[in-house]
Image (cartoon, rainbow, N blue to C red; front, side):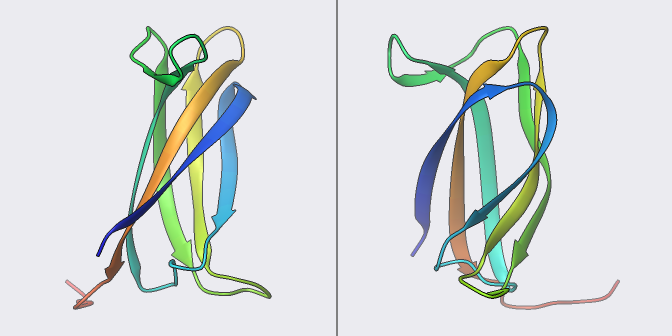
Length: 99
C-alpha cells in the first residue's frame, strides 16, 4: 500500500539538495516526489508562475538511522518561496534489470 508524507520547506531558492529520513523507505523502494509553490493564505499547493520541481530522486537504506530519500529541489524564482513537497513510497521494486 502506498504511503505519503507532505513537507513544507520555507524560503527556498535555487537548487537545494534535500534528504528526508522515513522508515517506510529503503534502498529498494519505488518513490515518487512532487513539489509546488505553497500558499499560506489557502494552506495548499499553489500553481504559481515559478518553476518548482524535483530531480535526482535516490532512495537509501538506514545509514546510521532509518531509511529515506535524497533529491534535488529546484525553485526557479527571483526571491525565496515556500514550497510543499509530497513524498510517496509505493513499496519495494519487484525486478531490477540491467539493459
